Length: 496
Image (cartoon, rainbow, N blue to C red; front, side, top):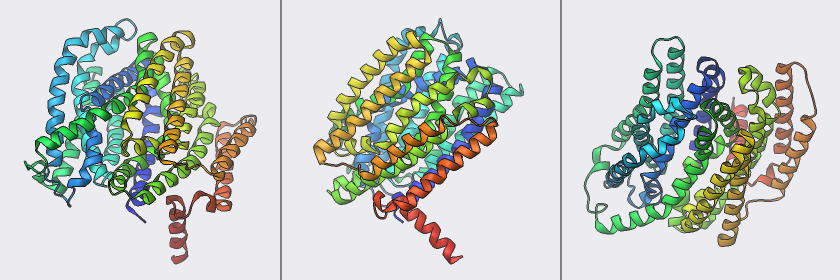
């Protein structure tokens, strides 16, 4: 089993363990332990900080993935990481001066509808700093094919920490001010943990001064590439957070909480794509730099077909059980079921089109994807501007589906136009049609007992797809991650 397969499986296991913790924390404990306004506060604070954290590095995360293969030599990368960190620090200082000059204009948008956020607005800049540098360090480890540690920290450690501080706050061990401080402190720990891990395994040599990296030529080409992909990074993050930010402006923190929980449930569908992408990005850059189109094509085709198969299963499991699942939350969150149904279509479109963003970004098509993102960001903001005041949370959900579906379809068209890459085959069509049929059948089946309803529907869905996988496994593609994993399990059982 190759590097991508091994770490992809490890990341998926970690991610779904994180789902279990996140489910317990966000979908079971927080709705009962925090008020909707307090949940909305953490979501808006995180969304704004994450958006800023994507702005000040100006695309340097992409530089790490694209250019690290040139300098990677065991643990010694000739000071490459130190050089990137130094440039990022300069960018952050420049951005901070700009931000401080306009912060009052930005935060005043939330004063009327989200006054609790106004009280904690001073955490935004430091929180964005720690998130930004944690992302940079995580990208370095992913590009070095060591993504398991950052995945563990992000998907498990941070969620366990959040669970603990939420429980302690509920027990009135400390005040809301301390809770928010600790919420932000979790990202400080994340950054320091990643930094210590890198130094422990690579040594301080990663920060050494070396004219191999620290020279005018590299500064020019790194910054040129960083600026060319900065619009991609910023646009992508803005599209993923603008809905929550605009809901906080037009509606209230309580409705932000309902929407955030619905979005979180729908996002479970996309987790395999995120897990695989952390590994595949580095491989795509490697294969493109070495003009290895055979393996580049294989990574794209295999990932798309597997992600579509898994995405359809998760889409059906979540959407056919969402009414029953929300029964376990306070009644105020029951209105989120329709939001989950709508936004899940966006998540499914992302799964069905595979790692197309990475394919475009690391095959020097950054200009095209930058233009696309700018157009879609304008579309997203415009749709939210008109639809949120008109239809509230449903309007925001519709805006997400329209924007991301267009985004994903267009990226696939670009890949076919430029590289003649088309990962879709008869199996893809079969899986989508089968999923639609299953959805139409099961949505009309009512089982009074919610526990039996969830169990029976889920088992039936999984069983159907296991049969499909067994009968049509040759249509996926030989030696994909999924087939290798099944064979490995089968061999282990036979040897036992």
